Amino acid sequence: MALTAPERRIVLLIAGVQFVAILDFMMVVPLGPDFAAVLGIPAAHIGWIGGAYSLAACLSGLAGTFYLDRFDRRRAMAWALAGLVAATALGGLAVDLPTLIAARLAAGAFGGPAMALAVAVIADNVAPERRGQAMGMVMGSFSLSAVLGIPIGLELARLGGWSLPFFAVAGLGLAVALAVVLILPPQRRHLGDQTGTWLALFALLLGRRRNWLAYLMILLNMIQIFMIVPNISAFVQFNLGFPRPQLGLLYLIGGTISFFTMRAAGRLVDRFGAAPVSLGATIGLSGAIWGCYVSPVLVLPVMALVPVFMVCNSARLVANTATISKVPGLQERAGFMALATALQNAAASAGAFLSAVILDTAPDGRLIAMPENAMAAIAVGVAVPVLMALLERELRGPPPQDALPCPALTAPDGH
Image 1 (cartoon, rainbow, N blue to C red):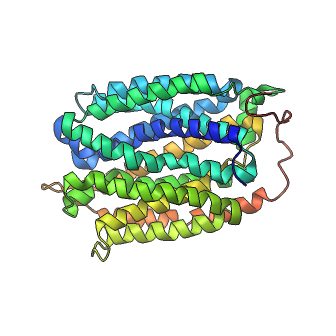
Image 2: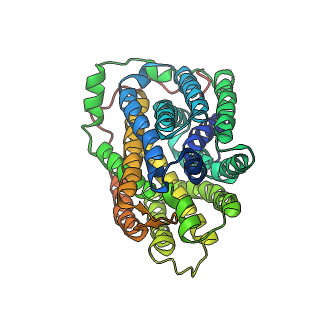
Image 3: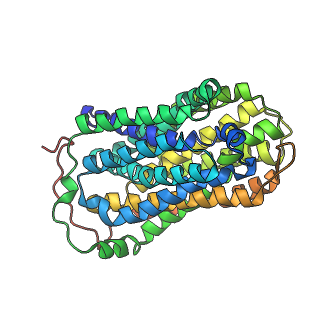
């Protein structure tokens, strides 16, 4: 069943929000070797910069668990985007590792709530039977950031210096924030009949089996991915001899394929369930990690293996997000997603920091111990489809007895 016109309008707007928030995070990783050379940062420490963003997003997500459901989601999202824009612009003004980390901490503090609110808005306005399609479109922002954002960012850095992409993303974020204010209807339906304290809501979110299955799945998924992602650019360049001028093309190919794959994955989730999609994606993901980082005999070239990694990661992300959005009730949705986003960013930070601990940098710039890092990442991800199957079975059961009351359903425009 296709999305309705109001659903599609909101989904496209939220996809823009996600594009900015995701690109703000993702662009730092492939730019790592560029700004590392200028700012005197060892290649093996690039993971600390990505981890700083994730750590701040984790802490702000934990705080958001207590307050995000108390506000109009449109207003809260606009403020979160405004803070993200300012912090991203400051990143372009960094002069060394500490100032860059400080700017990324600020960006993460606003980016985490923005992404949690985006998923909550989709879940509020799109019927469950069409949510896989909606999440496929929204999660397509990951692919578009690779198709358009990362290659353009790499080219901007080549032409105008490493800081230019930061300023470009800040400008784009400002435009999206204005669009949210002008286009998105007020999102207040969740505000009716709220009872209990913030601590009571937090205890409620931690007291359900289905919630814990979702949280654990998020943790393992993100730890696996971010043991690999921060090191792709440096590894393929310095270990495999991949030419820097073709780096943008690598992300372009992977992102283009992922964009179409994610939309297809959303429809597959709606039709067959998330567990089969998650299982297939995990198998492909493990194969790509092994072939590129553990045993890079190059039966498949880098230009194929890295896009396979991106495609499988994107498909599993669609399955995960679509299923997780069905776990909370309406009036606890932003709080649940804020906590989920906090755990997601904590796991991403842990994965990035763990890879930075495992890896070392050789005098010629090569990353040492990448096979060990990759095998550990594969081991972490094996449990993700198992947890997905358990969560889907849990969701087929009756709703939790402690679920908060839900006001009557209204149209996305509030009427």
